Image (cartoon, rainbow, N blue to C red; front, side, top):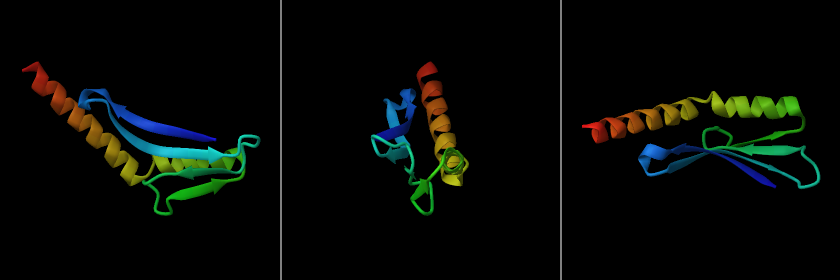
Length: 85
C-alpha cells in the first residue's frame, strides 16, 4: 500500500510537490518505508511507530523540505500580489 504526502500550491496552477511516500504491506503496517527526495539516503525503513514518527520528522525538518515550503509560499505570495494589481 502506498500513501503520498503532496504539497499543493493552489495559486500556482495547482502545483504539486511530492514531499514523501509511505509504503507498507497491505496486511501489516510495519515495516514501513518512508521515501523522499529531501533525504540524503532517499528512504528510511521503520519497524515501529516511534521509528516511523522519527522518519517523518526527519523529512519535515530537512533543509530541502524547508526550502521547498518557503519557495512555494514566496511564489504564491508573488502570484497573489501580481493578480491584486
